[in-house]
Image 1 (cartoon, rainbow, N blue to C red):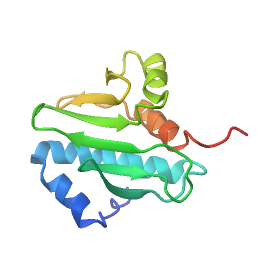
Image 2 (cartoon, helix red, strand yellow):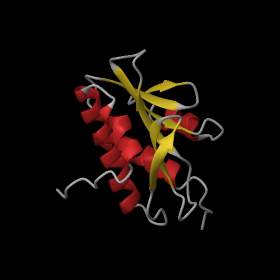
Image 3 (spheres, rainbow, N blue to C red):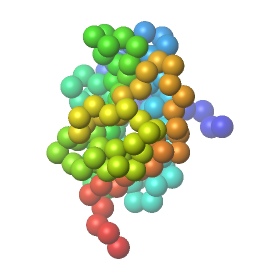
Length: 139
């Protein structure tokens, strides 16, 4: 398996470093899945890795093919972490209808995981690809 892409932004690296080690590993695994999914999804192109609301976020700035995907851990919920999507889209509603038993959802904005969850990587990669291609015109 190839080495994970290094984090280019000091601010993004600091956001990951601010998390407890077990959660940092979980978030870095989500980051790697986002980057791998983007690289293998036609039309997405290079992602911009930045901070949105102080949390690592992945944008399709170059291709403009999709919607932002953000990942975070919050001290108020120490055993949970989440992948956030733009709440103005239909993404989470779509994921809820496709994967009602695979994920736990928060409103129309997030898929929430607990520290002990075994992630359904194929389903999660589908959700990531759907977000990263949300604005792409159907062919």
